[in-house]
Amino acid sequence: MPPDPKTILVIEAGRTEAHYWRDLWRYRELFAFLAWRDILVRYKQTVIGIAWALLRPLLTMLIFTVIFGKVAKLDSGPLPYAILVGAAMLPWQFFANALTESSQSLVSNSNLISKVYFPRLILPASAVVVSLVDFVISFAILAGLMVWYQHIPGWQVFALPAFVVLAILAALGPGLLITALNVKYRDFRYIIPFIVQFGLFISPVGFRTSLIPEQWRLLYSLNPMVGVIDGFRWCFGDESGLSTTGFFCSLATSGLLLIVGVRYFRRMERRFADII
Image (cartoon, rainbow, N blue to C red; front, side, top):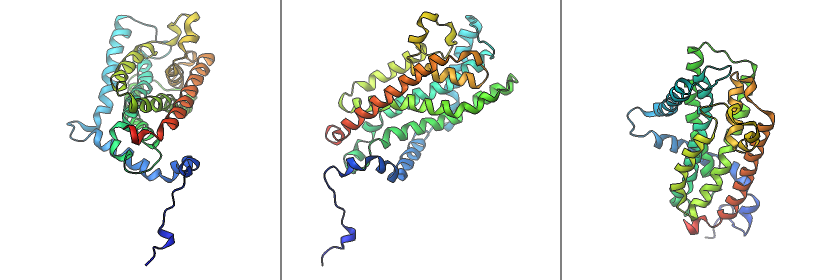
């Protein structure tokens, strides 16, 4: 008995390429499943569970507050120093987690890549979403600090979602680039911790961008996290801390990295199953 024509799946050359971006929406349930799976795996068999999302940024924030706020006595502007660091630590921790998790997303799901078709872009994107969940949880730290210091942000706080989107884009671009490189060159798994550690100290987490000499400030703003961190602080009351020129410079860098990351990822994508 011949098969029902309705059950036949026809695969044509170039068909997946033509419908790739549409497939991202069609596979949205897989995207949600992978993100939920990674959230469960991250805190499986941990003693304090999801509280790790609070402890890591909290401990780092305390160290920065003691060293730069109490010992070095750096200028914190109109914000209490703890809030200054907290408003920077949240987006930085998100960026670091998203970059680390997305860079390993293809290698850690190699068995899935070699068996079934789906837009591979789903894997690093779902890793970024998992880091976003941690970000939302750790936001309780900043809320607690504002209650403690009786600090009430102004109308700028309503612009916070825009800077969250900018943080996502800043993390996604390098994440796509590095995860594609990591498939071919496994050395990148050793480079990522160094990039994250180095980036922490060259980003304005423990200090204000205004402390950078003016002649170097534009060059410093090429770091995409400078605009994100300054934007977060602006949302919570540091009105003089956000430079328009520096912000658009960081925005341009984030956009460039996103374009390069997507293009390189798409160019390498058809070879992932063979290499991995």
